[in-house]
Length: 159
Image (cartoon, rainbow, N blue to C red; front, side, top):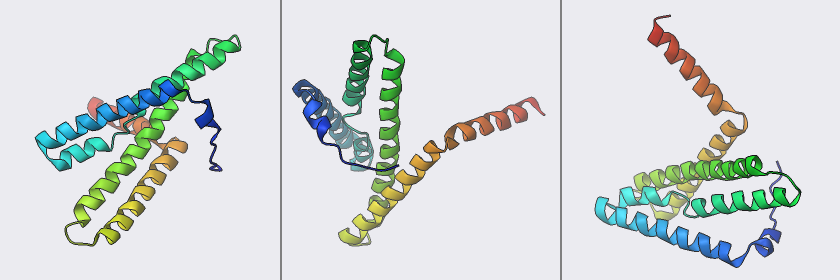
């Protein structure tokens, strides 16, 4: 897989799509702040790991994919759901990396410098994100679920 920077999407995005992402992202960030104020910064910080624009981007991606397929005379519902699902999967992978980053920073900050802590937390974030992405790409999650389900099933039935 080759990673490239494509700025053409910035020109295709409509102003109200940016506004939707901004408003929903702000609401989610505000909710995380309220949770942090009520339950403490450690708990509130975990909620900041939630990608704030995920709800907006998933719905906008679904809408755009559906419209694109309908212009070609196709239904597009399945493709739109798959595209939104892929976006959500990526956000989940990134969220897991952010949780690992936050956990590392939380554990290291009391006894180490900020520079060392941020470098270590960034390495942990990149490693966890890459491992989760690799597992997803190789379909390891469904294999693991299948193995656990069959293992639990045989234990429950006494086989």
